[in-house]
Image 1: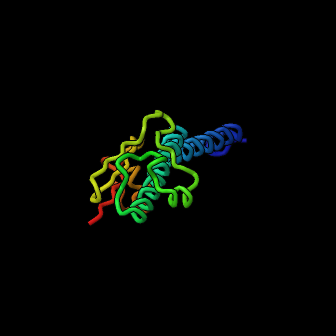
Image 2 (image 1 turned 30 degrees about the vertical axis):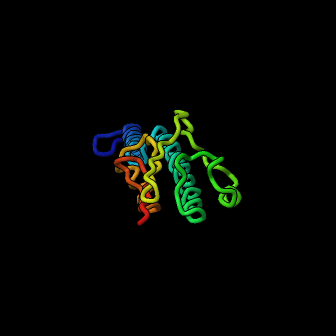
Image 3 (image 1 turned 60 degrees about the vertical axis):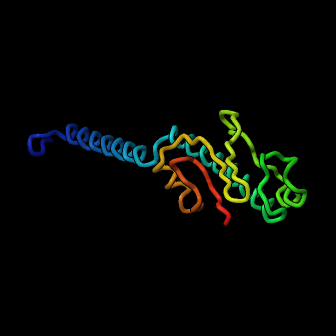
Length: 148
């Protein structure tokens, strides 16, 4: 049977093709927004790095509250016993992917920064961590604490 010059078979093909194209558009849009599996892996690695440097800073802040100064190096032996007990799961001191130690910038009793090399863009880092950690600077990849 012909409808407006098309057979039922032609109409079905157009409907199926249109549905297929619509599904492809939705999948493509989803990948563009979410970033796909590569971005997902980068986000997961960056969350691990951020967690590591955040944990390091919690232990260092504890050390500062107890002793009144930051340690010159971040080594487990230099952290006071009270802080080692409060945070028994010692933070990773090295990047999980590159195995490079996280940079630790220290100015006696004034400022301390712990940094990581993140894989994501600055905008993405700000979106992931900017609201949870106001002392995080995506441009440098550092969390900094300044004492007065």
